[in-house]
Image (cartoon, rainbow, N blue to C red):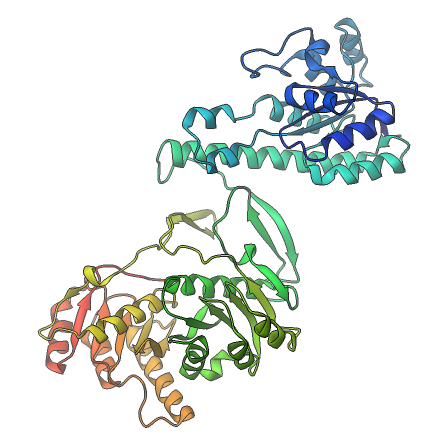
Length: 529
């Protein structure tokens, strides 16, 4: 028989949501309540009979509450193997009573850090006694039930009701697993704060990253792969996981990955005029800005209407009815935006499989942070690519000075190229991508593909010439030879923006001068793999 009747419970919580109701139910069932500090006061204020832990241990709470439950009477009552004769004898000799249920949640360390509190306050919110009780209880789950999450109180009620005031071993195992995960996340947050915020280290000797399961996904990148979505144990930047899904099927692994890529690119245009990003397989296939969102959609779609089929659409402003109606005319997997009016929601509702995600705010592209990539036998860690290039950082390297319009197009193309898989070439004109070349092993082929996309768009839309004529072209890395630049000139580009830094920079600059185009160096590369 593995059921353990609950006769004594120790309650000590920072988050007091639901604790009075829980204690009341336990007391009604005849369970002795033992508690500490603020929890004990809350229970007494509710009219419940509570025994102070100091009465149990014979020691008062001391040192501003730092020492309350760190005592053999408490941990002996938690760790004793009850059917071990030596353990039973020790309990009797030292007047240690068994504790059957522990309900503990920890000092709000992460919330304290996020509040901007000073260092001393943060240190005081590192819980010591709580994690110790949690770990002791979880280790001895053969006899002790540990509950660390108020969301599990209902499950505890049901368990006790179904088993005449006792808990089963499977339930205790499940709660123990959750408890150890909770202390791991807690310690991870503390370790990360000491390493990164308190010590200011970029790459400490060791660090842990804790995530909690949000949902299991139907499958991964491919049907034979398993997948799940996890969320960070602490605060997170605004992103796709924080979005509200208004309608549509559950998000798949590929939906989440692509929507994240679309949102990352859209964040580059957060404070600018209405913009639309259309993305497929984590690469943009059309990006546009305009005076209205509908016009931005039409321009972005015209860049590559074939690739847009089954893609992801992101907007930097709330969606309106006319734009939503236009989007629904082609098959779209996901639409993500910082809002949608009633007319837009009504239009999308006619496409029930379309996933509509609304976010409170766009992420900050300049935010700090780390990118982690798993490789066989290790983990690659780098700072985020949060580099931002502005007009004041550009270096003109050609004889011809670019016009203000060319600079605007170059910076637009540069923002897009940052989010295109390398080798990346992006043509843009008047705030619209004219052609995008992605993921080629040499830069010249990326340029040719981008120009080809522009020609196809011109034919499809009935334009007299491709939009690469008079465009700016962005390259995510330097041109190692002049051939890539010459290819861009042949496509009609009059302005080039690139990092510079090649041993053959002078050769490329000479080619630009001979072609009569303008070129600027950013001094910053944006490889993306």
